[in-house]
Length: 358
Image (tube, rainbow, N blue to C red):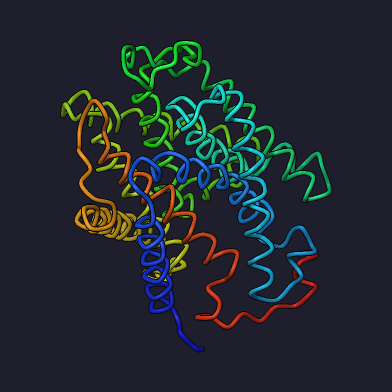
C-alpha cells in the first residue's frame, strides 16, 4: 500500500489508539492500574534499547527478518524482558505484595525515564564505546539503567505522606528526600524537556560539533533538562499552585505523548521541509496541541472505557488512569507498531538482510 506521510502516521496512530482503548476496556480499574500497567511498563526499557540503541536491527536473528516476523520477534523479546524485570521488582522493591504497591509501580515508571536518559541523551555511552558487540552493549546499558534507577529511587522517593493508607508498607518506603509524587512529576517534567529538544533536533547544540560528542552531550543535555524541567515544575506547582499530580497529566504527559505522535508516528513530516529553529517551534506547538487534544479525548472516553474514576487526592484514580492509558499502554503500542513493525502492513517495507548488520 502506498500511503505516505502524514496520512500514514495519522492512520497508524488512530489504529493503535483504537486497539489500546479496546485493550484497556477489558479490565476493571484496579486490575488495569495494577498488574496490567505494571507489566506493560516493565517491557518499555527493553523496548527503548531495541528501538534506540539497536535501531531494531539487533539481535540479528530478528533484525534480518522481513515483516511481520521481525516485529513479532522483537515484540516477544520486549515481553520476555518484561517478565524478568517484573519478577525482580515484585520481589525486591514490591516486597512480593500483590497487587504491586505504589513503591514498585513508581520505581518502574522512573526506570523508563532513566532508560530514555541513558539510551537517547547519552547515546548508550559508555557501553556503546566500550563494548563492540551491539547486543552486549545494549544489555549492559539496560542493566546499568536499572541499577542507577534503583539508587536514585532510594535517594529521592519518600512515601511518608501515605502513612495510614492501606497501600502504605513502611518496610518498602525508601524514606528518601522528597514526596514521592513530587519526585515522579519532576522526573516526567524533566524528560518532557528532552522531548522538547528532540523537536528541535537538538538545535542549537548542533551548532557546536564539540557539544555533540559523548560524554559532553550527555552532561550538557542532562543539565538543560534538569534546569528547564525544574523551572517548569516550580512555575506549575509552586507559582501557579497546581496539584503536582494534576500538573503531571495536564502538562508533561500530554506533551510527551504528542511528541511521540509528531516524531515517531508522523515521522516529523509535518514541518520536515523547514529549517531549525522554526521547525522545532512548530513541531513543539503541534506536539502540545495534539497531546492535549488526545488527553482530552481519553478523559472523555474514560467513563465508557473503564467506568467512573475519581480525580484528585488521596487516590488520584483519574490521574493514574489517564497517565497509564497514555504512557503505560498507548505509548508502547505506538512504538511497537511504528518501530518494531515499521507500520506494516499500512507501509510496505523493503528489507534487506544486510541492513541488520549495519
